[in-house]
Length: 164
Image (cartoon, rainbow, N blue to C red; front, side, top):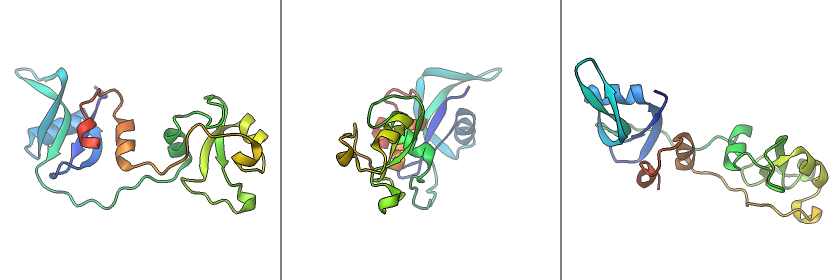
């Protein structure tokens, strides 16, 4: 049982993702309510059967600080779907600064992309325009909801209305 459950705050805003076990305990202890069961799946005890949660909502509002996505190497790879933003390959990946560091390029969401070693070497100390290497997708700062969606695995559209 390694499915994930979307946890909503009392106001139905996405808060986090947790395990099915944790979600079931929250529902069982009346600390949350079941919003969406997982399509036809059940949890069984010795004498009872319970719907497996896919989305739950907390009964009390939890004040959470702003949840932004941290700028890390792994998160850049996730945002770019683990593929080179120049040629589309998924092998030998590294990070590339669109405006090279040596020319004042910052370490930001809008200046970093995933690139394979070959493309990164070919681009060198130039911008993509100067090197004649157009990007497959323009870099952007991802939303927290996008990363919750990434954690969802294959939940079909059970989470879609809550993640926007």
